[in-house]
Image 1 (cartoon, helix red, strand yellow):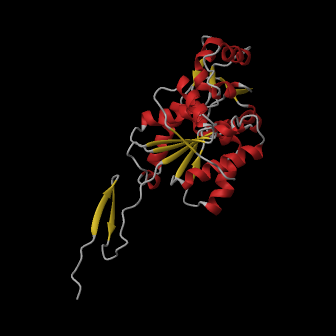
Image 2 (cartoon, rainbow, N blue to C red; image 1 turned 90 degrees about the vertical axis):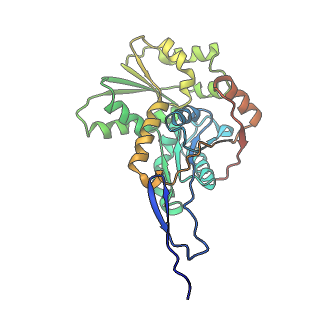
Image 3 (cartoon, rainbow, N blue to C red; image 1 turned 135 degrees about the vertical axis):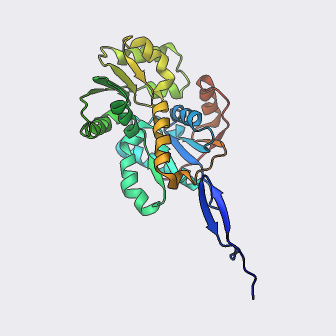
Length: 302
């Protein structure tokens, strides 16, 4: 008769798991990093804020620099590129991916959530940056008129307009919203020219006749141009960056979803992938991003 073997209790991130050691296959639940995806370098502004707010969280970043910018591409192109990026991050073990790109959030997120995940990845999650940004603007500000600077793809999708309508319908707020399409700005950032006179000149062009109380930089590349926006907008205009907003909302998301949070790796490990040229991406990053990033090469398949 086999001796009685007591179950083993493990404590993991505040939750308790009971395993019976009668099986040789007994293992602890595997902890995973989150994925952060962007068309290029802009998502680093979101990732930086997440790292500051949740410093222990392990992350894998993927910038699709080879196909940047997304903001001037068609819906189908953006969808296919984004889906390939999400699949890559899933292949790296990420249970959750943040689309830290407004164009991807506007053009690809809903289709991925509604059509791809239920069939291919029912246990994975993909979230975007537009909904949490709009929630913040409605809930945490008292402005009457908001201008959104964004890529042509984000503007044409009307996703910001739809999200504002949906959230405002649940509140007593009245906010006037207008959008400004800004072709060319992402290219300047990707080229490492954020501090150039050309960047100042182009931002000045898009800021002409701005009349809002608040300006949202609705592309995660645009915080690298924050100095120029503040220089060219009226002094009274409040400028909002998405990184801190998304990081705060993501922390709230994890509190509301312990079934995800409890299985996230929290060793502070950070890995960076790019589909672009490693030397060129490293050179561009070094011009505006504090700290050295060791980029790894990623190849995406549709």
